[in-house]
Length: 93
Image (tube, rainbow, N blue to C red):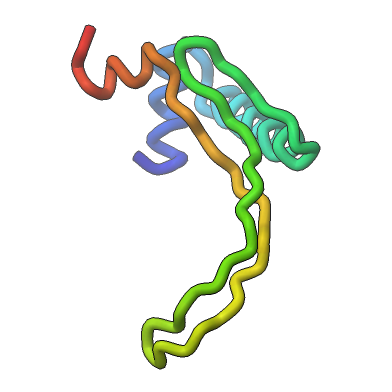
């Protein structure tokens, strides 16, 4: 499903216009980016949790040459599915 298909599905489900559904989706995305940028998490009960995690620096290998390279530490966005979403995906209703 791409963004336009998601907007259309949201509009149909919520009884909104596609323009309003797209504004809502864009607001959610921007708010999520801003919140994670402040290293805070977002918990949506039954859906999941968006959070930021630290990835330590490590040594890796260039697959073409086999030469060791240093991979810098960085922060990564994570999503952990909630129980209801997990059960829905695994058809455990």
